[in-house]
Length: 85
Image (cartoon, rainbow, N blue to C red; front, side):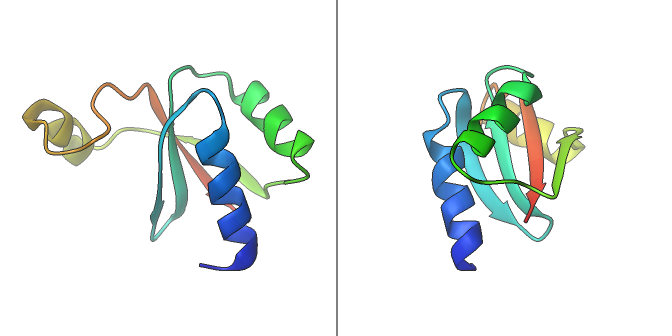
């Protein structure tokens, strides 16, 4: 992980509405307790972090299965956000 990505990862983990953060092939994914993307963007900007891409990601069938079977620590996540720096 690049140094910029590490700083973004740490900031996302510290965001009060973040329930989980993980790296994927697509970038960094964060599950939020709410859908307030503006608050997340303001928070990151306040940390001096400006993302080039912020998008709501639809939950996949695999995500839903993992939630139902309890095999994923992200049970009950409201949304997943994708970040690219």
